[in-house]
Length: 102
Image (cartoon, rainbow, N blue to C red; front, side, top):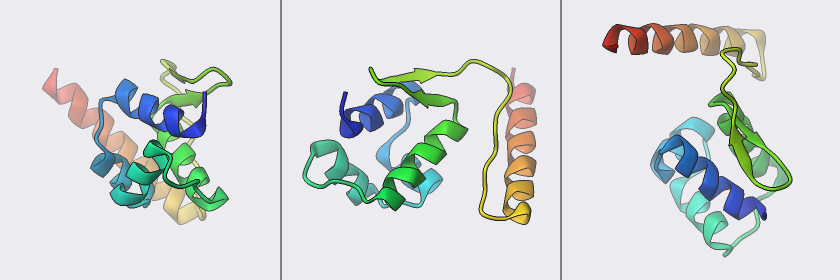
């Protein structure tokens, strides 16, 4: 499966729009559309941003496609310790917010 198909599949598994993936990754929705349609090949930086943001949502990329990781443990990555700490706090907040709804 090609990268463009994996991105589309990952969005489908997570049931998110291009706009949502754009917000998560910092890659424009227009660029994601061009990647998914095959109009452009992503740079290594763009590909890493997309993969990192989807990994953070529990998506694992495999040779055959994508899988959703059901493990409750998430590996947070960031460019600095401060950014990682902020991501951790956001993750805790979202988890608690989701639990209040149920």
